[in-house]
Length: 412
Ligand code: ADP
Ligand code: ASP
Ligand code: MG
Image (cartoon, rainbow, N blue to C red; front, side):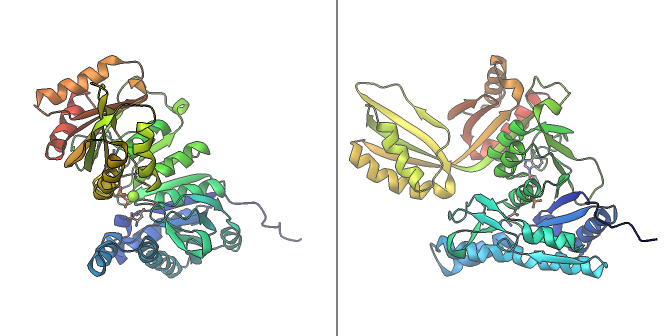
């Protein structure tokens, strides 16, 4: 009697481990045991790894010690080496456990991106090699955060971008599940390192998670959430160190609990404000201010234009502090061209945001937010709102107090 052919496809599981989950050889071995267990349970496993511990920061600091303004291409080449270390180490640790494994860099995994260094976007994914390795019974360990741009140049996806590698692979491989292992137990109502009373959420909807991530909660890379939503890929965020259910990021319909409320508070430090003062008020002025910033790939955020007075107006907006100086330089030129009076720059600001689908059409939320801040005598410098978010710009040194106050005010 001949044996049955072993052609039944095994479900694919993508497991991503963040830097702190891989900070030491011991932690890599611990993560490898988790992967081995999943493989033993019947999954074809694709592992995505970040660089070990704070090695990306250390590489950045090395670069800053040899050059004031290193070329973006060389920085990407350098930063990608962090994941280039952790991926083979993970593969070796798996082999050591008797699990056949192979590590692949971004280009070997078929991850194609555009050419925007330091913030590249994945434009194509050809997972043929991964599929072949899985079919041969190997666990595939992919270096996160990196891809291949034009001319085979290495690109990186932006800080925190390994999440995006994991979700893009999960979508391309039609994985059954995508798990994000990190150093906290899941997604909380606020950064648990900032607000000790923050509460772990069982589930959170994609739009809410996207706003949290885009508003500074670095636990997920925003682009990863966008891709997950586009492919309705549920993400499971959980701790590398503790057993526990973690948080499921899923569609709004899949959430049964009371949706009609604020779900979380996010904060972001290192925000700068730029103001173009005395701008002649005529059509096209905003475009002439923001187009050159967009050309330089600088994202302008909270934008406020004051009411026009005697034909002139002021235009203020925020950028990440890291982009502040470049934005000021660009605006200096623009101000001269459009005949604006001057450009002012202010550093040392922060953003606090309250987020939840329930904010739609509930004026009380804004009122509660402003009162909570004013009760603590925290001055609001700028305000912006979206369907599911209200953001206030405040002084950076008050940010912890502000997040705590809002967490209390909304009874999270
Ligand atoms: P990893 O290295 O695993 O990718 P990150 O440092 O990128 O981990 O993200 C995890 C961190 O995100 C946590 O240590 C926590 O301080 C921070 N964080 C910010 N906001 C939240 C939130 N709402 N829920 C959970 N963690 C958050
Ligand atoms: N190592 C990269 C970073 O520190 C990518 C990641 O961790 O997701 O930003
Ligand atoms: Mg991260």
